[in-house]
Image (tube, rainbow, N blue to C red; front, side, top):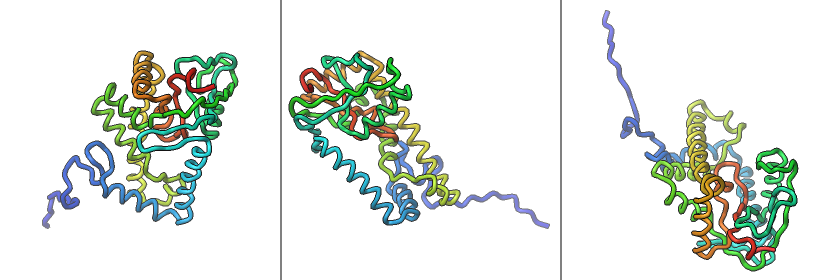
Length: 262
C-alpha cells in the first residue's frame, strides 16, 4: 500500500502571504473588497429598502437645510437667526463661556437630552436643562474633515492616520442589520464581521484622540479653538460626536459664543 504524506495548498492566483485579498495594508477596502461588500448587501436588500436608506439621507439634509444650514465645498454656513440648542446643567450656563457645544438638529437635541438624563454627560443636576439660542449673524463653520485633519496632523501619528482612513471607509459602507447578517453564508458573515470589528476598533482609537484634544486636554483644546478662530471660523463641527457609528447629525462647538449667538 502506498501512502502519500505530501501537503498541498491551492490558493488564489496572485495572492501573497500576509496580504488580505480585499484590504489594503492600512486596512481599508480595495475596490474588489468594496464591490464584494456592496454586492452582498444588495443581494440581501430589496430595491425598496435601498431607496428608503437613500431617503433617510435626503430627509436628514432637508431637516438641516430647513434649520438654517447651508453646506459648501470648503465650509458650512448657518444663517442669521437660526435656532441652536444646548444641553447643560440647570442655571449654570453662561453665554460668555470660551466655547459652547450646540446643535441645530432636533434629533441631536433628543439624543443629548436622553444622554444627560441617563447620566452619560456627567452633568451635576439629575435632569438636563435645554438652552435655546439664535445666531446674531451668518456663522462660518469648519467641516469635520478639516478639524480632523488638523488634529491628526498636529497630535496624531501614522497609526492614527491609518485608523482614521479605515474607520471612515467602514463608516461609509451600507450597514447590515441583524436580519441580513443571519441570511449570509458562514464565510460571508465572517468577512462582514471582520470589516465591522476593524472599523469599530479604528473608530474608538481615533475618537479617543479627538475627545482628548477637544474635551480633556485643556491646552490642546485651546490650541484648536485659537487655530480655527485664526482661520476665520465662528464654529467647528464637533468631530468627536460626529465620528464613529452612532453619529449625531450636526454637533458643533461655538468658538466665541458671546459674539455669535444670543
